[in-house]
Image (cartoon, rainbow, N blue to C red; front, side, top):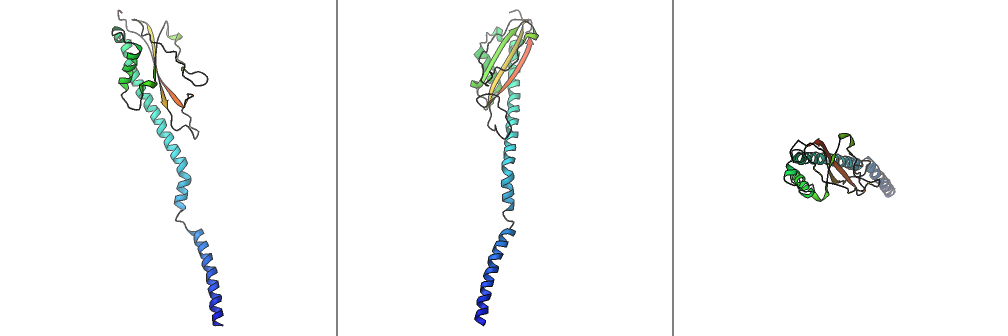
Length: 190
């Protein structure tokens, strides 16, 4: 009888040991933090990258505005006209004022036009209905006392363009940053 009891107890211990392993598995909390982090990490990182990308877009727009203001002042004061700056040299003035490695001058577009009155100024973005850039840019810095509009555009590449955050407004997935300055040239004699 004793042997029977031992073997019977042994089988009972095996059943308890198997049940205790399963119950220990269910009760174990060691991996709970890792699973919770895995569930929260993807939306958290997506939000973090979207915030960083939005901040970079605003930072780039601020740099573009500052560089465009410096270059537009050359036209307003007549320095661009007296030095006979061409469209490319005016564009290089803006590129030199930017001086940030994130910007590539090949993606920079400059449009300088003169108008008879401020009410006739066209400030629409040069994009067609598909989101492609319409390249009809001019360079006319005007004479003394004329109304001039300097528009500077930059194709900023967007990396995080998902999760419901769509900063891109161009067909190639970029955002068209723009800077506009409308002014009347000073009354210089040339």
